[in-house]
Length: 384
Image (tube, rainbow, N blue to C red):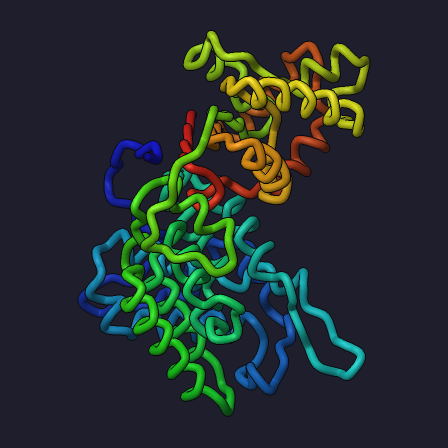
């Protein structure tokens, strides 16, 4: 089971249009958000976006979204979430747009990096946007093109089931539809048909407006580790021990959480091993990881549960470890901790082994927050 955070008052995004007039105050949006200006003059491929630059497209997408009856009938908070996603969905395009050798304009990778930029932008709001809301906007931006590209995926069923664990697929469809209606292109109807097919496919797979359910946590974990698994199959749980994989920026409170919650568990700490081996805190050479894995191997061979304590801030980093642990029939639990970056930096300055602030910012910029497709159990612990 995932940790649920306590509810908060209804959140609204600044200038999100409201009933009855649904007025889009574009002038105030331009004045209030400095990142809007960066969209001006960012070229797009005229075959797919004949309407003009990213700034023009973004306004058209917002207009298309707020004209949608499906959007208007949503609760206030959900309307705000989708409006924020529409406004921010191409925020990384200026940094990723380039003219290819054949003269075509592309922006490959802008969705993934855009999601990280959205997280940073929303984290700087005052007061900060609540974690679940922020991460929903982030996920919509990251996966917003899935409805259009679904049929090109090698395993469409797993694609929609996987994304449903992170964000509502009907939200993705709403943004994708607004994205298509907010552009000038020859294949508009074909794209809208693809989005409708996506909705129907998600409905068939019981994951349109909620996560696809599995017979057990272990069945879910195994399903996402196979290419052609059956989501309804109940997998035999052959796990022999549990590994708690910590995740979070330096200074997020991982050591404290372990002392408070798992005081009797053995801990494999990369920080401690660096100290033992006289390695600087911002370096992790191969011999440190080798030593850590050897200790983990010994625990798992004994069927003994333990904590792996390191930053583990990217999905790729965690996946390598999860593959290693799963090979020894370990049950995986990820505990992610988060506090505001200002608090991270304050704590870091008071540590005996200070991590260079440039490294902290680099880790924050590349952060991938764990999701429930990665492990048997994921907990998100967010502090002030």
